Length: 390
Image (cartoon, helix red, strand yellow):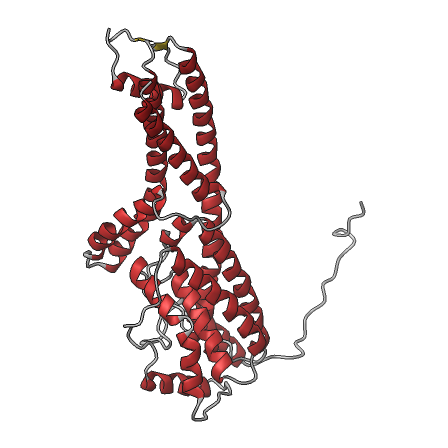
């Protein structure tokens, strides 16, 4: 037995299985700097982002970014399978087992790799016959691992895509409530109607739960962070940042709104944002452009006032809002730069053109139409011939 090859084979098998266990089964943040999954993302995301970022057309560029997540899922499975195949091949080679090979009278390492491949993928060809008790033990063990690995991968896909679909549902619903891309000013303006406070409170409750689900799913499956939304102007990071903007605005400078619920939603949303940034070892950005300079701040408050929202216009309102922004904007910018997901502005640079406005205009015309009351309607008479008794 060659001890070096044997130890190397055991190490390959252990690293592959432990990394797959941490990535798929373990429901908590994976640890370790030299994990296969972490090294894969470190070595592949940067060149992929550089190449995709060179595409000038925004829609094609976003499509190129969207390929990375699903493709990484497939490639990670291939890497784990190859690591297991190579590890068991080293074990067979270390044992120097006699193998009956019809193609070669002197089996070599490639023969052991072929034996490992046909075993782990449960092909059952039977063209190679190992003549050793230990070899039989490892063949049975590798066959069991191959079946379990295949079942684990099959179960991984529905869980992953189920979490992705659940994440995207609220992002799509935010389109009619805050525009596309969503902005804090637009969300507040669209909830300035009578009873809008209660509707906004319900919305923040839903996003509090959404943020908690995002925290749990994206820490357990960091690969979901690379999955893009259906539309180019939507993303989970943009929606999360917009909700944090709204909560910060309500806490720092808006009166007569659901400030208590805004604090609860802000806490869990910021918690999710910070923890996801720590997964990728991203410190908060410090050299970032101000998303809300003084002139934009004044435009924001003017829009809120015109919408009938009571705002605090004391001298400390902007300072209070800036304190809230410092708690999360650095992490949002860091993730935006890393994932190449743009952040939404506080105030839209141009009027939102979406389906909600068309529906709102039709409803406004209905409300403005004259109302007719007391119309004379002829009674419906049922004759004996039309009256049927069953």
